[in-house]
Length: 80
Image (cartoon, helix red, strand yellow):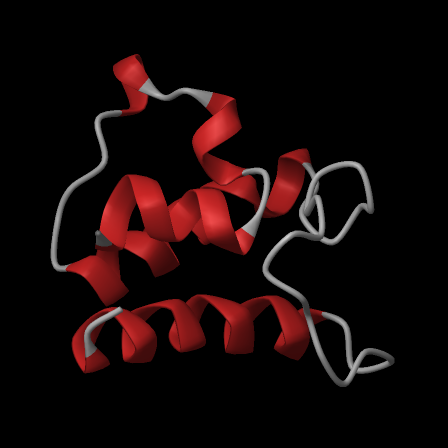
């Protein structure tokens, strides 16, 4: 992973952890949706965080929820 990709995924991790101060770490394989770290109300904010970190625009009409389940899948879909 490049240092830019590492910094980008760290930005997403920091956003998730910032919403859940009871957590101090977040493994790359934790399902963000099943664990309720990201819910339907915060999903759009997660997408905006990814867009900001990746410098891209996510097409909401073509979203595959599997790309957002874990930090590893986010990294593969948006920062690889």
